[in-house]
Length: 220
Image (cartoon, rainbow, N blue to C red; front, side, top):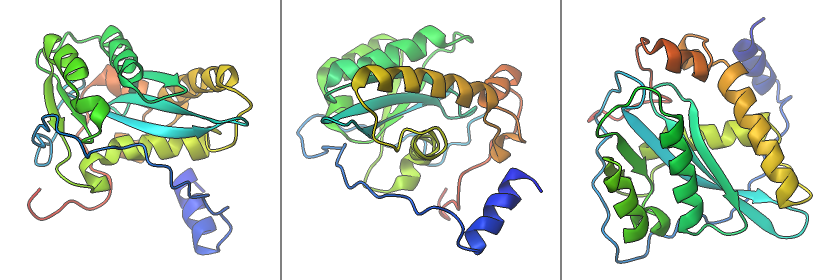
């Protein structure tokens, strides 16, 4: 029995541990900065480093909390960059993007940068940095998880398959855990949407047909 069939069996028999819902807001979209249109709603990616999707998620610590910013390649699902801080200000998301650009291997021009409408991604400091690197900005147009589905999905995988949903002693240990988790995810975690390849392998091969998470809208 394969992994997906096993998980489906456990879900049907109510054998999975229920996910703990943490209603911690990481998106502040009530600001007056420019919000870019959604450029990927009807886009079918055809190659790696065509679109980077970015998101922020909450990490619980024994004393306080931290935030994790991720930049993921939409086509290959490979985590290209990440950063973790005690706050979710612009330097954190900029560090994650800097790592993603450093890890890029195809020298693609005009990469679409897609994110939610959070103030960190829309503020001039971050927007100007991204565009100075030749990126084209794109944001979700409303609160709809499918408008940034891959980023949301990767957050869940890291949390519930690689231990980041647990309360971690401190930021130093959390940073070590995320570094290890990203390596294991990129090199070992196979995806059905990637024809059971790992993100690193799919990124390297750069020749699969893109598959969407969940159901697409009729307009997509």
